[in-house]
Length: 256
Image (tube, rainbow, N blue to C red; front, side, top):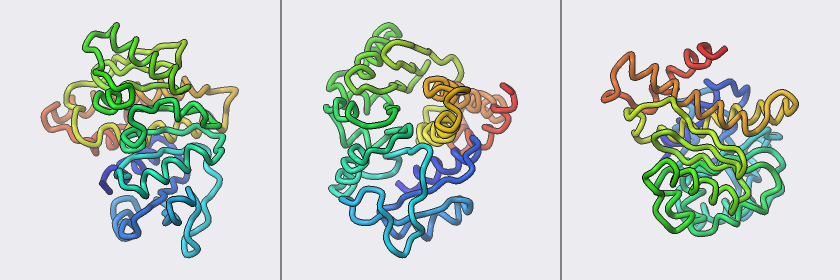
């Protein structure tokens, strides 16, 4: 799903990232991404067993401040090997695992507990069900308990997406109040992942000013606020994920 990766990088730039690098398993994407996001730096990844090692003809992989893994990746054997390599490569910065990175770890949330740096998991209901092998409760109290269990088992910050998204690090809990039903559309979660990538990079660079948990909470709030601004302008029914990126600058300005 190349569109998912494009939504991530576009959102990350709009959220303030200075340089976004997209690692690709499929070389065909080299012809697609520049049209949709000309600012994006691309590296074609070597064999999946090599993790984030770039092919010789690609620019060398830079030192990242944060990483987002899974959007548009697919669930092939190569994708599974790449996720395994990322989990074990010792990266110390914050990492967001979303979409297929969660589908490829179904029933195994403990795999994230050995990752060296901070981990943020961003499942929607289906991905969350796969991780813990049970349905996400419909009640808010049940969702809070579910997010806490996933956070504790994975050793991660859990962002349980949906109406009133829950953010939990095992001790602290934040329930988001921005957002609207129009955001329940394909790609909305990819936009959130891009925002998270940018704000987590800021937290990595300025840990005394901005904690990882604060960066996650801010990202979730802004994501919903951008959706609310978009809905006011064009209605919930017409809302698509790209609109969230377009309204992200206004959302950020509104909170200072």
